Length: 72
Image (cartoon, rainbow, N blue to C red; front, side, top):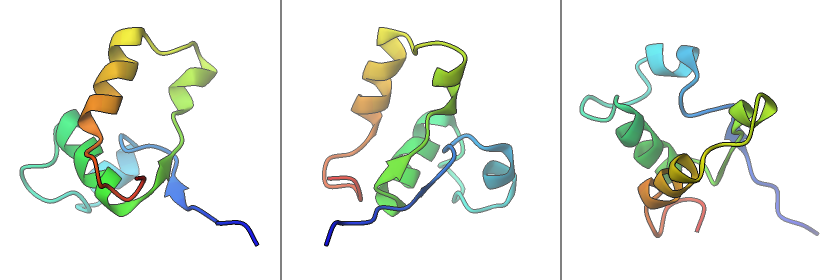
């Protein structure tokens, strides 16, 4: 049987950000992604619906996702 992975619609979702789920000190974009990646193995990047992300953003997302996080 295959593996099922669960995530949310975005680490920047307004409801998630305003819910208090992110700890203090982890509320900027970089901190949210780093924290999110320790809790979930996947995330939807819904901005791709509007256009492909820039190479710079894609590289930053990869760099900000810690090795050994829930996704690796």
